[in-house]
Each structure stands twice: as C-alpha cells, then as structure tokens.
Length: 328
Image: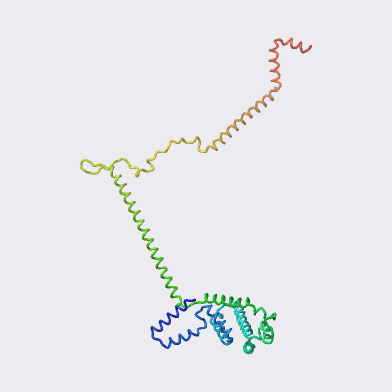
C-alpha cells in the first residue's frame, strides 16, 4: 500500500489549495506520529524493533493497542489465537532484549505493570521466575527464546501477518483514484484498438461486396447476349433457356433398369416355398399310389421281382430248359 503516500500528497495539495492552514498543521503533525506508517509493513516492524531495543514498554503497548483496535479486532474469530500468540511472543522478546542489555530495572518494571494481566495466563507461569533466574539462557523454559532462529521466525511471522491484513483490508474510495484512472486509460486504448480492427473488417467486406456486384453485372451482360432486335426495333428474347433458368423438370433421368421384383428377398422366399409345396405334392401322390397297389392285392416288391424273372427268361430263350436246370 505504498500509494497511500501519494494520496497523502494529494490531500496536502488540496488543503493548500483551499488555504486551510490550521488543518495543514494538524495534518502534518499527525503524519509525523502516524502509527500505521502509511501501512508499510517494513516501517511498522522497524518501529516495533525500535521500541523494543529502546526498552519503551509504554510505546510498545500503545502501538500494539492501536494495531489491535484498527486491524486485529476486525478479523474473524479464529484469528484471535494467532494475534494473542504474536502479542505474547513480542512481550517475551522484549524481556530477552532487556536481559541481554543488562536492564534488570526494565524487567522489574515489566512484571510490575503487567503482572495483573499475565497472572491469569498459563503460559506465563514459568516466566515469573525469569527475574530471579541467574542463567535464563540455559533454562529449559527460556532457552528457545534466546536463539536467533526463534527471534527471526517471530519477526517474519509478524511481517507476513501484517502484510496479509493490509492487502485484504477495505480501502477508501479516494485511494482507488489512481488505479481507476489507469484502468480507464487502458480501456480507452483497448477501445481504440477494437475500433481500428472494426474499420479494417468493414473495408474488407465493402471490397468483397463491390467485387460480387461487378461479377453479377458481368453475368447480366452475358445473359443479354440472348436478346435479339426485331425489324421494328423491339427486343426479341431468345426462347433457348439459359443454364441458370433450368428447372428439375428439364432434367432427364438416367437409364437405370427397374429391379426384377420390388422386394427381392421376399421373392426368393416365395420361390422356395413353391418348390417345397410341389415336392410335398409329389410325395403325397407317391403315397397314394402305394396305398392303391396294396388295396388291389398286389405288392410292388413282388411285382418288380416277377418282372425281373420274365426278363431273365427271355434272355435264356427257353422256359422249359430253365425249369429242368432248376430241378436238376
């Protein structure tokens, strides 16, 4: 949110333009004591470090109360634990810096002022022993806070937390003036580019339309060649139809022979059924003749046997000789 400084300059210019001298003095004084540091996270972190290293407990508490009232209280409820954790870590960091700077009086002042507030919190129970510990950097409850890794992690977490809040917090309308101006300028440039593209497309369509019109005029001129003038000067049109005036009735069908039957498959099935019926009739006539022969007393098998014997007799030439041959 570095553009806030630009907005501050615009407001200051407007106050000067209107001649509000007293307002300008108050505005400059409040800018000098601005606790949000124009919503620049690096400036806020530097201010916290400055207060810690100067052992200014009152200024540190005042700055955190300002952040809590203007930023943290507007967050959702589940962020309350993270805010409280950061606040307690900053206070512990204050004690670590005071101890490394040999400021025992600042440590005593810290517990004197904040004991009523911290006594109800479980994580501070062991820290009340901190002013009386000879080597707190070696104590299990305090050793981790003396490491550079813990201190760097605290500052980075605080920096990221404030950056996220500053990016998500709602901004006044006047702070959007510059961004909206840039957006309007960009939209105007895009509109100009689209207009030029539209003009180019319209020109291309006009050229295509003009070319189509000339083509139609040439076609009409060629069709006028079929006109003839009579003796009295009147126009006589040819009765020969042009290719563009032909209709479907003028088209002759191809010489394709019609099929033998409309439905060939069913026609074949019908032929097969006829052959089957004729075979059944022949078989029925054979059975009828067989029954007729049986009814007349004759046997078709014996009849065929007698016929064979007669043919054999004729071949041998004598019936008697054959009978004698049989008896012998």
